[in-house]
Amino acid sequence: MILSRPAISPIKLTIPLFQDRVPAGFPSPAQDYIEKDIDLNRLCISHPAATYFVMATGLSMIDAGIYEGSMLVVDRSLQPKHGDIIIASIAGEYTVKRLCTHPIVKLESMNPNFPPILLHDGGDELEIFGVVTFSINGFQ
Image 1 (tube, helix red, strand yellow):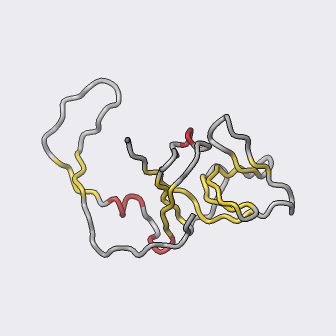
Image 2 (cartoon, rainbow, N blue to C red):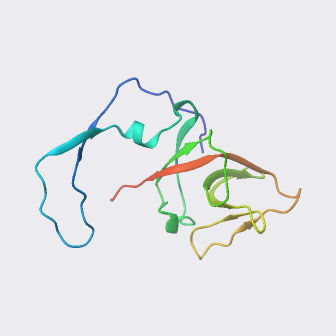
């Protein structure tokens, strides 16, 4: 896993954002106009100097919408809190998990087939590398 921040391109890319929402249920008549443009960098990145991207691997976070090959947007400037999905290192091994601070400190998988990682007082070296703010997934 590479944790260095890539150079940020000065090019601003805006994509059309349609006013109407698309229902996941029954079809709705589409509107033929655009409300505004959207810049995905502005939507996904609040703190550019503290943000990096990393690709996920494995199946332990599927119930959080993180799949094999998901691109994660990670913000190092956010203070991790209970319930956040974080990038962490435990004894030098990187992982993405949900931070649980009470009643005991543990890292939870978001897949019932994977057990939580219990963190014992002083026994496990936990280093947090940021809070995951977005998961970007493709359909292929």
